Length: 352
Image (tube, rainbow, N blue to C red; front, side, top):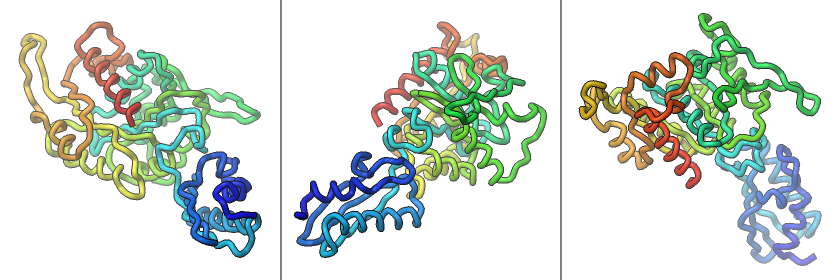
């Protein structure tokens, strides 16, 4: 058989991607096929980046080429991991979710869960199908902010297997570690136990079709973060900060974590929370309690978009405490600010 690109593709169409259960040609995982005399060179992407998986794929390709084209043909194959923001149709995890976005902060207390809650509710308000995983193991906030304290998820049977059914509130499907523990009980888990529990919220839950799945990460850049961002095929991440230097320093670390070679998750943008305070009796005044434009300046330095500057507003805190996100209020200043943030977020994600 002649050594042509069509015949090489025919040979490789017999190679099955083990996790995706289809051949690597149909899945579009073979790139840059080159022929140099009797040597074939190409790149194959696979879902499992482990060394042994790459070695098996290399051997499978070499065997397929030899069987189809003969032993005289030499094969030079490079095996790479699929990118994190890969096409949902070839994901092994959460294939029915269009965009999976992590919301992170370098430190606690910057309003990460408040931003996540209002982003989720705002997306649902715009008509998107939205899910939220409250992955803040040691301080879950979603049950309180969505008025779900004391609720417990039920099971649902799908194709003979029982899955966890997310609880819905304001159009958002939600799973939180807080649903599985007493509100007053401290969660005292070591890293591996926490990671295992969080993985169940993704792999053992029936999320159905979603436009967006938001992940409210714990503060910091620890073991849980690394495990999640390496195992879950993220479309991107948002970093939340406040304007003062002590928060900005940790936000830089969070951005740099997503830029690490072993992670490579695109940062969609930065949100500066508590950007200023305007008292009700002085609506024209802005008081920069935590500093001015710290997040805006950091976004410029790190060359990432600034998605929003959100002021410190009492009604936002009150809305979170009673379990009705501020973005759902009608014609209030806080709702309009969050609505603009949601629109900017959608624009940046779709652009990426």
